[in-house]
Amino acid sequence: MTALPKFDPSKPVVVNPRLSVRNAAKFVQLPATEQMRLLHNQKFPKQRPQVFMQPYYAPPINGIRSFLERGVAALPDARAQLQSIKIASRRMHCTRVLESFVQSEHAKRDLRPQPTPRYYIDLNGLELRLAPDLVALDGDELRYIYFNANAHEQDPKTARLQLEFAYWLLRESGVDVLPRQVELIDLFSGKLFSGRKPRKTSLRDLADNAQIIVTLWPTIDP
Image (cartoon, rainbow, N blue to C red):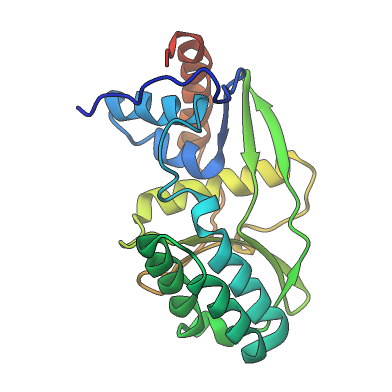
């Protein structure tokens, strides 16, 4: 097992336990040692390279939004922004994400970006957070869309859990939404995962793991 990063007291610490629905879906399927690593990275977020976290992919996600708003006229600016990224590996991966979307069938959909809300609920002491990569009108229906931007195919089980948790959190937050309105687009394979009504077992696992996280959080050292 790889050693945890050396603690830097100047870096921030997340005092209260919190997790995104994306990471909650990962957590419930991980072995215990990997669960602890995920929680450590959440509690001490600046002690590791931000390799495949959402901020890493913010430029191509913004480029996708601009493309959906303005069409192909937005691509020169989006591509130029990606080419200005200094780190070669990040520049390569961010370019891959934008081009994967542009070349996919999803680029032909009539998706019109909307403001992206943030939702938070307390689940047994865990702050569960939802922030889709994109919220867009598809016809007259809102879509809450996540992207798999990683350089490997999306795991279907994790995708289903993520969408179940996201739908449940939206409903708990008072949003009138149907399961199909929550989506995950796998930019590696091009596959679309549509939301489903949450299974009782999924929600039970989420609640049980929330209690585990709250118990473990104070014990996680730098």
